[in-house]
Image (cartoon, rainbow, N blue to C red; front, side, top):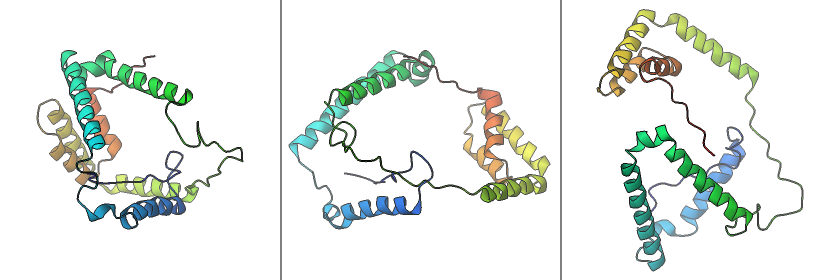
Length: 201
């Protein structure tokens, strides 16, 4: 069954969601939870032949994919050679073709398309004053924190990154010393380098 469910707000792909769009998303979840009766049983589709068949097929395809990844030398090797990116691109191209050929229905895109004006969504705009206030808070934090402790924690993180040690305790120490996310990332980048995703068509 579903362990958790999150309904994205309709404007999340464009900006931070507005209160109104968050409420629509929340109400959608609440309708599912309180009006359908779905949560009244542990597994409402338990034993369904169709669902069990889909699950079995998904497991089989996943195992096959795991075997392919092992054969090419693992996930890291797949990233380095672009194998994983090619797989993702192939899947995206196949899905787009299915949509264009009407083999996969996307309501409002290739079926049930309305001729009326496009839906206008009012996007959430962050005030410039809010941005200035945050910049001021950041500047104040940097000027009042213990700079020696910051460098000590970042240095320890860099040193640990060159070993096989668990980095989480070092990252937490950096955060407690008020190191910024950028500083923590930059410290690890000096050891690991920066990943640049290869582009494949």
